[in-house]
Length: 183
Image (cartoon, rainbow, N blue to C red; front, side, top):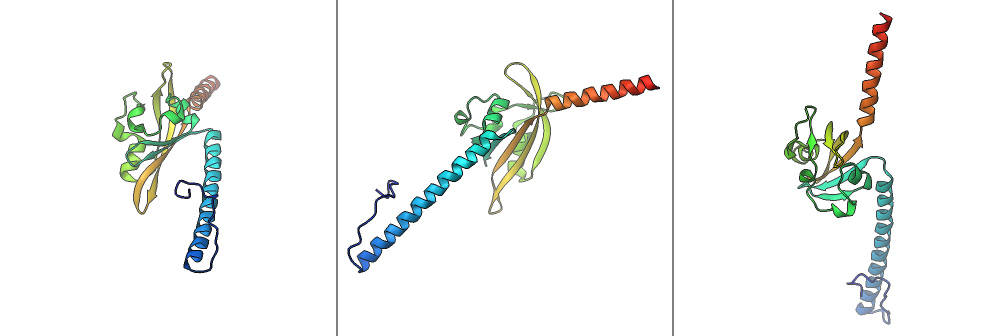
């Protein structure tokens, strides 16, 4: 039962010899494992609640660019569908980003790919064409996950900055027009 994950079963200890000591130790190990699994479940639920409530999109990828984790904001922003459906898919091939001149960015030049190959954090603003035809600007920050001096993945944070850029453009136009009128 313990081998199958049922840690509630205990062994009845009837003696103090080697077998009794083994049974006692086995019961202690089973109790510690049960507590560890319980703590892990609580931490997992907490982490999922944090990810689901974030205002930014977050995607975790493995060392080959496969999606390990995707929150709902990222899935909606990138038109990926349900977050649970993209797990294991190649993030570098799923999304096409565009540079400032509207040229498609090759997969090896995307922030996640650069981070995975150089182990450096990368940030920038890129264009994205949504399925409904809209073009948006997203700020992408990709940070490496390093274990024992080896990149084992990356965390990619995404934020839609389309409205911010539009407000900046309108502000610049207003200031330009107002200063022209004052002259």
